[in-house]
Length: 88
Picture 1 (spheres, one colour):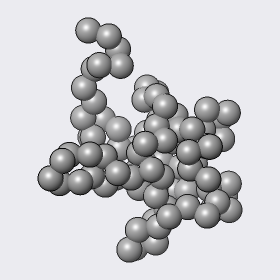
Picture 2 (cartoon, one colour):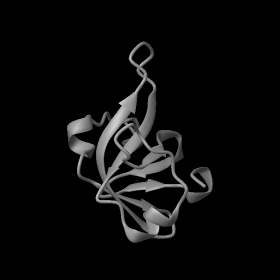
Picture 3 (cartoon, one colour):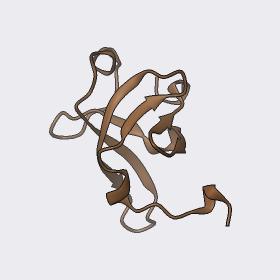
């Protein structure tokens, strides 16, 4: 089975550092928002956003936490790598 086909469970992802492909740190993954009917992953909720992230005009949830579209994820390994172009 190819590495990108491996299943990842949300509990394995929570707490991982979210970075851009150029190495900019956004914070850590606090939660994942998904569509209950389809199971589609919608957003990543950031915990401990960095000062760089605070300057970005990111969408926020009801409690004011920063959201990153899950569609911007490029890779998941030691870090969750996102495409900055898909966020801003």
